[in-house]
Image (cartoon, rainbow, N blue to C red; front, side, top):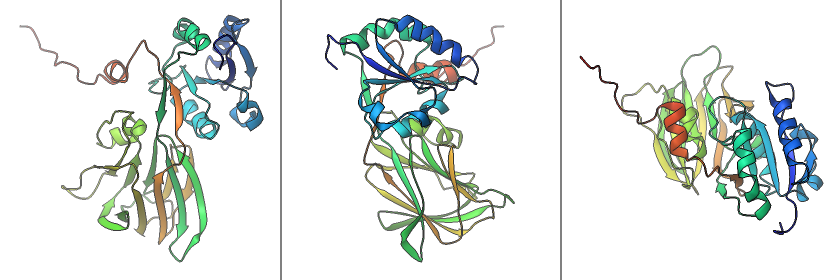
Length: 289
């Protein structure tokens, strides 16, 4: 974007959710004359031709909306600005007021843009590895859940072709650094800096006292095979896209060739969000007698 030109923006959000329609109108009214705006409420309605003309994509909603948009936008290389109208807001870093305050940096071309790694998930049968049953990119995580009738399942894992463990559990989470504060955190996995290049493998309620999460190189190839699964055992991408798994299906997870770009809010840090939203590292509350 030339510094003298107006930033070209595409705006996404579901107007049926919460205050999204009002927030979009407030912002577009503010941006009149300051930016060239292409309105497209739904990401599905936006074509590759439109994205080629855009400097930034502004997504109004919660983290789920950002994640869904980012999977679609990653191939285009358009940086995402998340406006939080949901709850936590790890990816949706801006409020409408903060975006207005930040807006001159978009005009000047000085917005802080960060690359975040993604994962690619492919599912195929062990008997026919050339035929994919499922394929998707993941922003946060790829996870396998036991599903109905909710008996524990048994999975075998390998990293770069080397067997590492069998796991009897309720499932497994393979997370990006961005997703380390999502399902991975709830399952007891570590918090990673979003700038890291790594994957986290975290079991979900393992039937073992010694199976703990591990962090591996970002360029590793992880393969998971279902040894014993349920009728409803599923592999899920960011909790939004899913595929049923059968015995001897292979779930292959490796780094996606493209990254997604996100604009950081300079008014807050990742650690601020952890502290304010999740009370991370909060001091003990001592009772004064």
